[in-house]
Image (cartoon, rainbow, N blue to C red; front, side, top):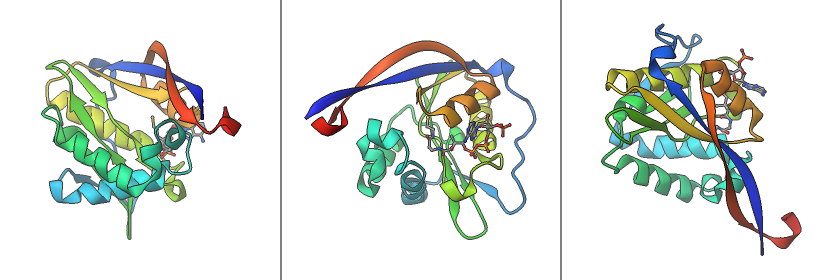
Length: 182
Ligand SMILES: CC(C)(COP(=O)(O)OP(=O)(O)OC[C@H]1O[C@@H](n2cnc3c(N)ncnc32)[C@H](O)[C@@H]1OP(=O)(O)O)[C@@H](O)C(=O)NCCC(=O)NCCS
């Protein structure tokens, strides 16, 4: 075994700077508010969104259904869990997007995993999902929201940048890997 280091960005946004418009989804899609009975639906979309992506190397739990399920349980049972910042996007026959939010203090929120399943990307769903989540944070009275993103995940970095998130810190995450991949 060896260790690989992934560069990660912490990005933040001031909620006064977000677009006040209610995010609109393309036809055929709708938002579903958090319901504890939907934990497995979130876990399934999380797996489908992440299993072939860089973040499942950084966080191997994202590459397995049991890991996604455990993560959803851990997130949703925290006292800081914010249901108004937690959403699914549902398409005509399947769930296609997931996001969760935590309120770390009365002013600062944290976005957990944003995921849109591959077949439904590139039509504005990711942007609408993050905006819906930010609106939820704002309605809960928070002022700022941060997230962490792997630097080489360009679609995600560009999405956050285009929404107004700004880089505030660069970090490195050490991940145990097989020697051949170091
Ligand atoms: C990141 C992710 C959520 C984007 O979802 P999406 O629905 O495809 O995004 P949208 O269609 O709303 O695109 C919004 C913006 O994101 C950026 N973007 C999206 N896909 C991109 C790509 N392939 N390359 C570069 N920028 C991209 C662009 O700025 C785009 O705005 P534009 O269409 O005006 O150029 C999706 O790619 C995903 O789920 N990735 C895997 C999981 C993941 O890594 N999540 C982030 C964890 S931090």
